[in-house]
Image 1: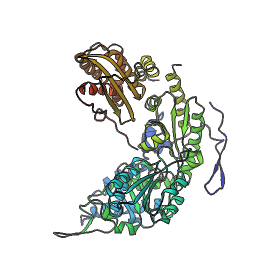
Image 2: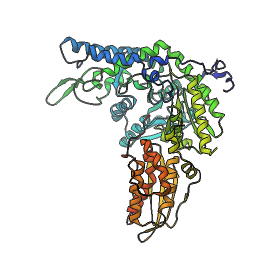
Image 3: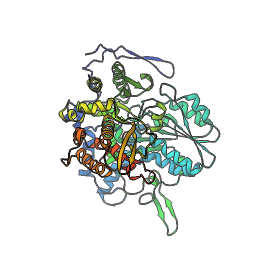
Image 4: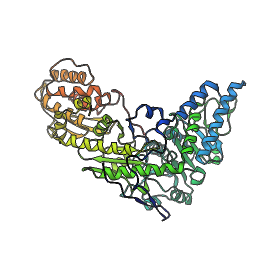
Length: 432
Length: 159
């Protein structure tokens, strides 16, 4: 339908230049993962699922692992002395070990399970934040943040009487590193930032941010919801103090995710929630806490979640995590080029070498809500709205955008369906 | 293009979206109210001018999708000259129409909003201006409280 896209030259942060060979990407370009591995996609061959930044589809391996757990090992872990409870405990523990391995975390007990990134970040603000942030301190976040890594810090700052400051962006939607550096001062207690922007796809230079924060001894908290699913992450090597992630954005089930945090910090922090499992001894007047990770996991844990997520991690490993971002960039580059050729379309965010597989755009005179409805009729699932990033939308001076996000099961045909559908919607709304 | 979508985006809807009627602020309004739809961040303001029990002028401004804009635009046309009682009935008839339980009452060009009932997520869009209008009307004797479409139908905004 369209001429082949020219190769995209990518300049890495260290100055090395690499070429992503995009010239051969035609309509036959296959996905990285087999579509048949995903029951929902297999059952809907004409579905173009381009909303993986919101949540991903699940491979059969994940669904089967959860089913198998319930059929063979279900009991309340850490409680019963019987073999079945031991099996559930083992499934829970083993899943944590496998997830830690995937995330590049050597000390698996510093992976604290939570419902997802939102709860993980609230754990940090509630426990570490309330203990350590005082009046007159400064909390630094960025303009790119999802509300989950913005609002908890904003509220904490107000409660503590601390200053809440926002690091602004360059014109291309990347973080202004000089601006950030100028905001980090001796009073700065926290620098909270996303690994990858969910709204624009901008990838942050984690090592540089960590270096700036370290100079003043500030805690670094990284929202990895859009990082861990796409980038071959080694949390230990990133150097951040805390890293939050969501399982459902990386082929795992909803309701499971977690927080990776430095052991000495976790040990010094008060518990986040109180109840069963998180205690060591409960006296009439005083209680002592269980060891990590249990201290932060009150109540009967979600076992099926980690079981499913561990299977998801292994599925991703089998695809090759190094290939995931490369694959997404091929698709994102194709989408950016073809969408930009449509009259009235403005693609937001940075060049392809500074972003992941997220393409946010606007179409003149067509509201994103209408556009996504039109696309839906063609089987194209995209996100319309503010992407839980209203501070970012204000800076971009848009009320909402339409966002396509790519993952391992997407292929060039998905991109082309998107592009054709957007162009059809444009014509229809123009009255043509 | 599906038949349902054709019914949703009828040409009258697209026309009102392109060229909304009474899309202006009203300096001498009797009352006004803001409405917002947290699902998509849409926001509009409705102004009403009243002469006793009668609406003599209606206008709106704001940001919204084609459905919310067209619904607001048609609303401003149909309510001009209506009494409060007629307006209340029109509100109920339109609400019934977009939620898929039409009363059979004549709602004029607003019947074009009937296609919305096939898309539950869009009911909020079609009702936004109407809720704001009602809030403005109810607040003639006091300050209008901004209305939110949250609580009506499914929706919400996640990651």
